[in-house]
Amino acid sequence: MAQHNKHRFSRRSMLQIAGGLAAAGVGGAVAVTMSDGDAGAAPNREASSTPPQQPEAFVHPGLLHAYGELNRARVRVRAGSKPWAAGWDRLTANRHAQSTWKPGALKTVVRGGAGQNYPRLYNDIHAAYQNALRWKIAGSTPQGDAARDLLNAWSGTLETVTGNADRFLAAGIYGYQFANAAELMRGYAGFDLDRFQRMMRTVFHPLNEDFLTRHNDAHIQNYWANWDLCSVASVMAIGILCDDRALFDRAVEYFKNGQGNGSVKNAVPFLHPGGLGQWQESGRDQGHSVMGIGLMGSICEMAWNQGVDLYGYDDNRFMKGAQYVAKYNLGGDVPFTTYAWRSGQSGAYREHTVVSGIGRGQARPVWELLHNHYARRRRLSVPYITAIAEQVRAEGGGGDYGPNSGGFDQLGFGTLLYSR
Image (tube, rainbow, N blue to C red; front, side):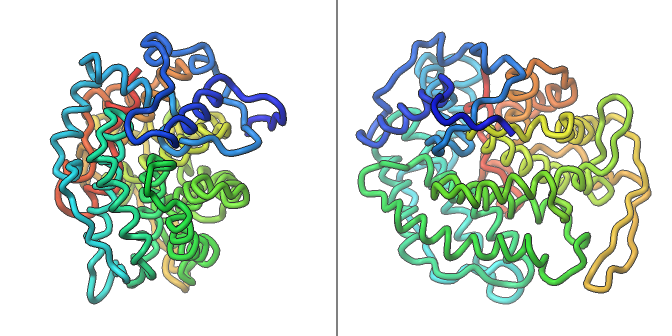
């Protein structure tokens, strides 16, 4: 963790704070500007191996998108520069990114079992997020109003997320995504942030914490990495959105030392030569493996924007896991150590002896974020991450990868937001 400094903020933190103050006073584009060189070039701090300082107070915006990244996208889109223009085109073409999208808020959301209705929630979350991006980047008031109305409708209606065990997935995935949409709209005229924060604390966070504490009363090894990771991502995002240091610290500590499969040493249980780390779900299938990479990447980026370097924790352990998954999904061979675990409440023995080819090579919008951090910020060689990012470019978002829930597991648009 970066050292706490009571009296100094990094240049980037000051820019983020300035951006948040400016955004709070206008309904269009942020009034504080940087030069094109400042917005697009990699500053010395970004290129170094030193993480940003952890400020005493949370920086806003400070979840997946910091002020510098948003401003760079704004400048480059306005100039029509590549590849930002291609990423922008993917955003504006998405049906969720239109100001005509109307809320379908529910009192009770069900995922798993009888009466499932959760697609209403994830479709509205992605519509809120995508419209919020269009407002942040282009200053489009109709999109800003649409995002605000979606967030307000849900915070004024939703009381419960329920269902079978999948309710924990809903609370985790949609919790961190909802918080990211709200963070973009912080300070927007008419957005009821206080009510939204209460919803996140009372509806989503209790399920996140319950899962991380009890794991649905199953053996600690029963649930795959992505179950833990979505809960950790939600706790961290809610902590930042609500300026709650205890929640943020809880997420950081679980990432480092949690007993479940979402802590980084359990998510990457074996290290292999060549800088490869075997991912916990690699023997299961590749769709869930890539999903887990996307969730851990989101956790690391949110922490980074608050001055905590989880990307590099334990000698870049996450990077090695991402390289492993990227190489295999590019068609390369990877080593595999037999992975054994305990399942159910009784802890019945299970094992995987080979890497799974199920879902191999599918496109998911998770790689630009990692390429930006490891190859650009840190100047590290990550050939497989770089290659798969180039293959998926330009990344879209929810609605671009099929109609089912798996196509909405990531917020996406990394080419627009993380190119440099």
